[in-house]
Length: 494
Image (cartoon, rainbow, N blue to C red; front, side, top):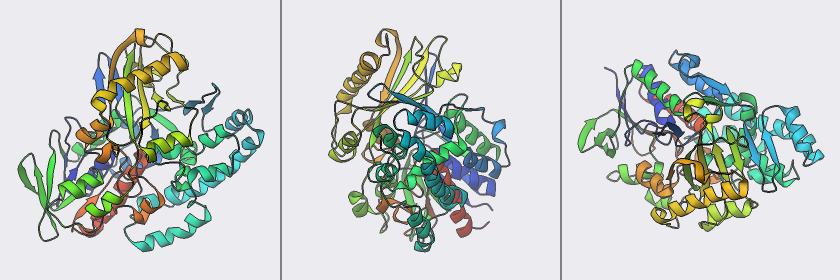
């Protein structure tokens, strides 16, 4: 009889591990707290506008293809992918901008306008990030569990050779001198909740990952990816339950026994948690003894930033915006420090805009724009009353977009507005301190030093998603699903 597996949470990590194990012959069930699947990758549909709530771009399509091939499926039968060129436009505070893409010659020409030597250094930087990319993606270290020190020691020579131990911004500064290019090639760790001024430069491989695999959009938004994974999962006989919050992971004699969901006890042989690591170990395992990453260690850990996400439907189109657009504050290091360390809410902000209606007209009514605006903000380590501050901050962002950036007529043409705050991440998604990325990927919380994909305290308990190896971001959590699958299959052969 197939072993019963429960997956807590239906983010991309949870969907990835559920599909992989179901295809292997396990009997898998997913439990999702929200009224729809997807976790952070939820969706809003209002007044003809469609918004992705969280992840908004697809990179490393080979990782997705690997997942689909595991299920003997072709990606093109489920997703309609569009290559974006450029990947995104980056506006600097001095009104200069660069259209960031995967074409080295075009990038060099654009960079040369800022600094000719930086343009020459660009190819050297690509070689640097390529070496890290090869180790993590090509050699498969991202899809290997680092729960054994030997795995870390095996990777150490490459870690040292590629100088990945140094902070990302420091490493980028060795190649580039202009403040704009230093930003361009150091900011990517922010996509996975990392502070560019202290996370190891291993995360700078994202630059090469984007160049090699491109940046893509799926018709219907990221939620089409959620729908596709769940459809294949159900085709293989898997079951998913929404409005089903897991209240407790039940442990009997240091071994998984089952779950308590909506007051009901359900028996399982194996549990995989895609929930926030702190929520899992502190709340769901409150009656179990956790030595590794227990309350004491979690309380001393460093947590990533949070974000404020604004969803606006506008009865006007803005040609200055591309599908992905970044609008930057004059401050970089100082703003990042305010967010990660000072835990204050400054008056300035940098913003990332996702405008899927540029590529997919089904995402907004005719002549209108569907715009998602994300501003990194401090987590709830310094509590902010977002029930009051939410509207104030949303108004500040829209005022800046209209009157400083130049989106004329924005407020007069608003058709839909809502927002998602750190409080919402905490209350709706069980994200500790309201951080959707969880633990910050600093050196002492990376690879072997991050919570492992398998629990050392409880037999047949596993972890997947942003809180475990290799970390956050869609490629990261999908790789974590592959790493965790290997452990489950090894420990629980059918």
